[in-house]
Image: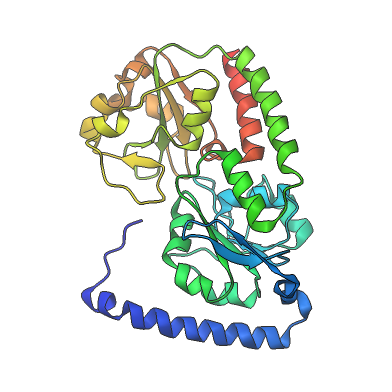
Length: 337
């Protein structure tokens, strides 16, 4: 996730960005002239909405929305927004090129949503060719960071709203996006459905005693934990689990990207950082399963493993939106009632 640009690139990046922005603006102008009236939504008025970069003016009724973080796309379908293109990537969920996550693939098919090509850099030409009237990015994860990095170029194409990285609670994410697309009608209903479900879940879940940590089992096998304020640990706390709030300090407060909701640390620190008696593991793409971790002596001697208090959740639970938080609650009730 970290890049090391050369000195030449550092000195030239400002000129390159400016030149690229001019090219994109020219492309957008040509596409708008050749297209139909679908991009005329801004003619009906505008609104000012919050964004990580400060308040921004957006169309009153956006009709061609592009979302550049797959973790945010499901909300837009729940809000009945029109999504012309979406980044299909979800943390740890393997998809074939152009394939959407199962959680909202059917919605994407119904709307004719295009998959934003994935790569080390955002495909600005593809985005401009969709003639968006609103771009949504930011939030947790690598795709979110990509949109933050490309904010100036994206803003040259269409108004670009960035989800603040500190907005990890799914209800707050839902409200933020509902304001961005001016679709408030479904918000209260969705949150009321969740409140009823979590009240029921809390009455049934008997959480194990002791502190809890959440491990990302990743392909590189480097120890990686969600920080306590990340979405999934916060959900676990809400239904009765006690989080280990000292994991970052135990790991020596390692540096992380602004959009990261996790930390990575040296394997030599595992016994110190992961000494909590309860552990959840999330096997991401290429990561090891719980049974594979049990066979690793480095993990097998941890308190959570010796006490058999290690539990596995699917990758889709890692950054839950409305749909996956409901499914995750079902899994927790099934396991801990």
